[in-house]
Length: 256
View 1 (cartoon, helix red, strand yellow):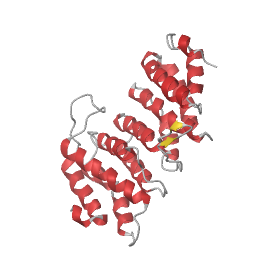
View 2 (view 1 turned 90 degrees about the vertical axis):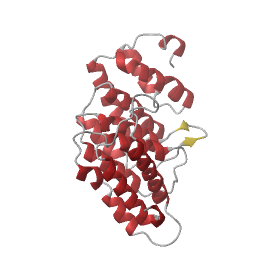
View 3 (view 1 turned 120 degrees about the vertical axis):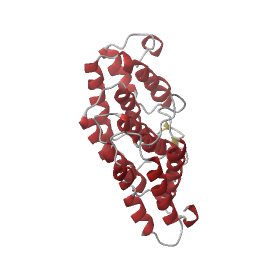
View 4 (view 1 turned 45 degrees about the horizontal axis):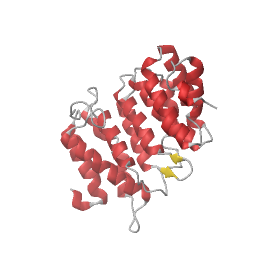
């Protein structure tokens, strides 16, 4: 058991970081979400480079954890590590294996609290999307894979906003060509074109709503944080707007 009253005012020693990191996979939502996560997020800038890498290695392994809350809270702290400059290609590889494959997409559970796999994963996608070591085109393709993965769950906790935000920020990367900025949408268009009459599949509803968010941000620009910083234009905003509108129109002809 952690003495939270003492550890929250302590320095991030290796022992303290290990204890709080272990608490990040707790099924207790108060311990995990209200104590462990904010404390680790606060400590990340204070850690030396070696400690950041060690913590990142530990968290990347949790994408294969049998417990859903362990899998879905790892990307939140990994996102903070990447934002602080820490990066390993194997973290991205582990994330890419997990993100589109995760089946438990509940936002909230009455016992476990927030799980939010799609939203928390989108936060890490956003951090990777802005990191110069990560290929933005591959990250856009990863976002499309998450959108198109079969699911019975209709996102109901702003997951579409979080993923649209992550995709928009990735699309601000200067090295993106116009072709790469829109090529990742081709599988979405093809899947929509293959759709049949009848009830809309949950994945299609999730995808439509995410692309509408992306269109808005392509039109108005996107901030690097939820509320902070100046507005950034997407690298090829006009091309992205036109292609997103065309893809939306495959499923919703009134859109374009």
